Structure formats: structure tokens, C-alpha cells
Length: 235
Image 1 (cartoon, one colour):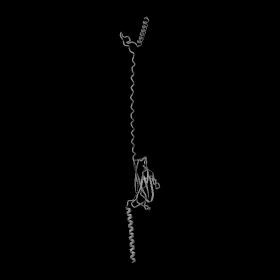
Image 2 (image 1 turned 45 degrees about the horizontal axis):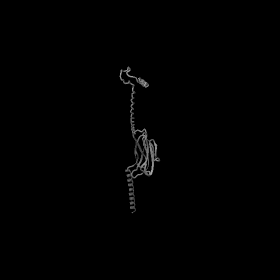
Image 3 (image 1 turned 180 degrees about the vertical axis):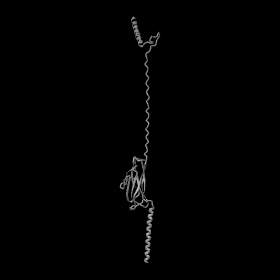
Image 4 (image 1 turned 60 degrees about the vertical axis):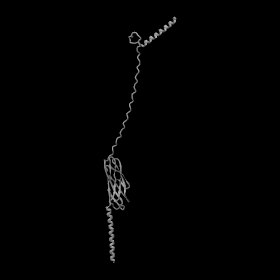
């Protein structure tokens, strides 16, 4: 009887161990088949001389918590230069040549937008795509156990700055030319001419002078007055 009880206890322990093993296998298989967590950097576009900002996001896998990560973001130094990143406590935009590093931990886990990096597009940057390459240095869950995390790269597109359209210069309105005021025609001064002839032969000069006529008239008038006085005296 004691032997039978010992056999039954052994059987139960075997069953329990099998169940635990099956549970572990199912949990492991489920995690292995799920999509891994993703750490991604966004994309942006701008003109030479502009500043652009891209976001860094974390998307945890189903049933997992991304509690810590360390990532490096490298960029095209011939087109871009990093001018800042956030949160400043966990990122360093001057970690290495053309490299920005984030290293952060949060027991509550990370999800969504976890940081940003700002780039200035060099004024000499050629038109084209500047790659932003993300590398996962470390990824762990809230308890520090390693997680499989995948990286998703981004890019900054350098665009051709449009040539400004010149503004048309308005054509000035022509000032009307004033009409010239006509010069009044001078009234001709009459030239003294010859007195009309009453008979006789014409003078050799072709006409009598007005001064001569006036003198003759005065003489005639004097003679008339003298004759009048003479007749008064005789009477």
C-alpha cells in the first residue's frame, strides 16, 4: 500500500512537471511567433538652409514592455548636421561623427514618441535623399531581460529651392504733351498812302506826303481867316 501511494505521488509530480514544461513551451512559442518591438525614426523634407525635426518612436510587441533601449542614429554629414535632440537627459547629438545616441530606461515601459532630433540642412547640400540609419545597441523589457527589437530607418529629402518669379515692373503712364499755345498774328500797321486824287495829273512821286497835305491845309486855313478879317475891316 505504501508502495502504491509512492507511485501515485510520483505520477502526479510527473504530470505537474509536464504541465509546467508545456506552459513554458507555449509561452516561448507565442513570444517567438509575435511581431517584435520596433524602434523607428521618422522622415522629413526641406530646402538647403532649413531646419527639420524627425521623431523617434517605439512600438512594443503584443504582451511585451520595452523598458530600456540604447540606439544610435547615423546621418549623411554631406547634407545634414544635428543641432539638438530631446529628451536632452537621455540623448546626445554629438555622441560621434554624424551620430546621435539615445539611452533610456523606464519601468513603466516606452510606447509612441520617445524623442526627437533636429537637423539643419547644409546650405551646400545637393538635392536628394539623406539617409537616417538606426541601429539597436540594446533593447530590454521592464525587468531587464533582453528583447528582440527591430530598427526602422528614416530619411531627410533635400528639395530644390524654387526660383522666385520676378515681379513685373509697372509701365509708367506717359505724361501728355501740352498743346502749344498759338502765337497771335501781329496786326499789320497801316502804311500811310497817297491821298485820293480829285483831278489833275498825278504827282511825280506817285502820291502826296501826309505832312505836306497838313501844311497846305494850315496855310489854307490861315488865308481863310485873314480874308475873313479883311472883309470885316472893309465893311
